[in-house]
Length: 264
Figure (cartoon, rainbow, N blue to C red):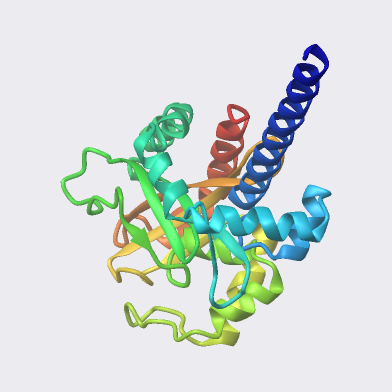
């Protein structure tokens, strides 16, 4: 009887260890998907996780069935699904990021006397999570919780500049909406703009989302060089001119690096 009990306990322990291992591997895949700035293929998941393809297929399929990842119909890669976003929304949202960025944002607002925004990358746009306004009576509308397009915003151009060529090609193959007379909708012109963004490390938008507004943005990376957010300074075009944005280049890059120091 004692021997049978030991066998049963050993079998139970093996099953529990196997289950724990499967959960750990699934969470590892979910983390890889979450940290990717673009939808990620099965091949990339296999390479980054070190798991065999069969295991990755099985676990990613389970995550997809529960809504934690979803397959992009264009790239056929995987991205975070609704269930993962719902969990994040039920937590503190971007509270930790906002707290770590606030001091730098406030200093930038005081120096520029223009609106400072904090945004995060999304699959087909960017989401504004915090905004600090100057005391001027004429200033930007409230963009908090607004999803903004990629091709006509300074944040969006930065995100486009960081995408792999194949995904950038897919996105620029879609029709680009003419938001204002200054919106760049020509593919070749936008690609030239993106190349310039890569060289400079910052991006600007001059009347391209709203013809009365200009903005400049810099990317914020964590210690592992993952893109986390963008910091932007924006203002009305009669006051926040191209010349003022150019003069602000080094300062906004410095603010982004300052915030990066506080990220894990």
